[in-house]
Length: 113
Length: 113
Image (cartoon, rainbow over all chains, first blue to last red; front, side):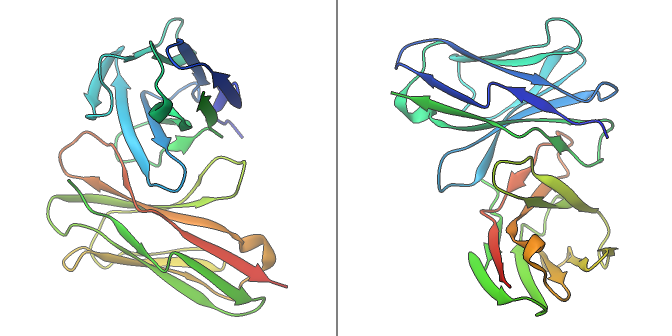
C-alpha cells in the first residue's frame, strides 16, 4: 500500500542552523501539508501546497520557513535559522483530492539545542 | 481560533470492554470531521472522514457518529483489544476551502490484557 515517507526520523541541530526536512508524498496525490506537534500539545497546521505554490499558511509559518517541491516527488520544509521553540515532531501529509482523507508520514522529530 | 476538544485525555480499559470518546468542534462553517488512530512511532492512520450531520461510519469494531448542529462526534470501540491501544485524534476541517485540519489533543487509550 502506498505511504508517505519522511526523512530523517530524528534531526538534532544547534540553534541558528538551517534544517531541511524531507517528505515523499504518495505519487498521485495533489495536495501537500506540513503539520507539527510540540511535545504535549496539539498537532498544528503549518502550510498547505497545491499546484506548486503555497495555498495557505498559518501564523507559525513565518519568514524562517519555506517549502519546496523541487523534483515532482520530494516535498521539503526548510527552517532557515532554527530556534529552541522549533523543537517538535514535524508531519508531512498528502491527499489525492479535496475532502479526501489525508495520509500522514511517520514524522521527523526535530530537536534544537 | 478554532477550538477542537477531546475527552477524556486518557483512558484505561480492560480487554473486552467497550468504550467511547468525544470530540467537540465548532458548529459553524463545518466541512468535515476526521478521526485518526496514532500509534507511537508510526504514522497517524485515517479511520473516518465524516461530512454529513447524522453520519455513522463503521470499520470493524470501531464506529463513529457525527452531530454537526451541536458540534460533536463520538468514537466507539466495541470489545477493546490490546492492539487498539493508541492515541485517537479528531480533526476539524472548516468550510473555508483550505482543507487544513485543526486537531484536538487526542485521547490516549490503553487496553489492559
